[in-house]
Length: 447
Image (cartoon, rainbow, N blue to C red; front, side, top):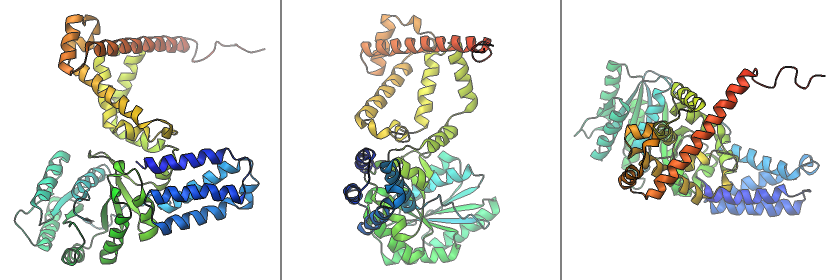
């Protein structure tokens, strides 16, 4: 995400780090590059102008000019201003009331229905009891899609096929929630290809009926400044409480994310970073600013790993590695665990200095991981547990079954054998260290 903007800003940063002295001239040159990068990213021109003015004022302050590393100080100022531009801190949901009602609104195709399911999944993990309400009476496919998401998440969905009165659906959904003990209602409302008055008035009547704690505008991040215009119109009509940016993983520019808070005054609360239900996360301005500036986001990476990886299974795997009994079956499980964390591109993007890794290299590694998974899946359980039995005939069968060449199967098995050897050596080293009391022998280095 934000690849284009991130690359340009990191180029500016490389130049800034090389400056031993800050002057008005070289600050102006650097900020001109930053301004062009923001405008190329489709950031609102007023937002870009105000951002540059604020950075310039602070960058030419006495403390920066006199500092030991003035270039680094300017980079920190840009980072801090970017955090402020994005909203300073995470804005959580207001969940007062029983039940709490959340309305998801937006244009047709922005991702409302999918976001409804993703948000419900997140709320379940916060010990809420969501009820998904199909309030889009114009698109039957939306009701079916929400029902499918409900089945995948094992969550109830309130659907009234054939009913055209949104307010009646809302009242019956509230009654149903009271009867079944659901304390959070998520209303998936109708969208349009463009904002029109009848739709807006219907949403206003629905808002007045259910009195929602949150009205969340779902926006496609890739639409850039147009997303900001849409947000302004919806806010004027409904007074939205915040927004959800979808398809952020496909947004190389970032104009919507960087302009939205400044123009509307309303926070971005969640972002969709992929198609899967788990690829949805709270929006943290400081973490997002770090990603944009190529500083990584290790905190989000750890949170994602904690959610996706079973700790007990991970400890068992670690024990197998120490004992040197790590098999291809375990390796397959490890590959599948990594897939749960999201795409390799999104994971690498959370690591500091990720901007130095070429996208082609990431794509190549991801392709190789898929091919390895295919090869291991083409093996029998016995072959996975004991690769030593893989003779030429078996390897030929595996290659045919996974659509690769025999040489690729041989290469994968050789790499795995090397990895096993490295693990055995590591296990022996750990045992030796344990016998030595976890470190050097007693008395070593004493006088």
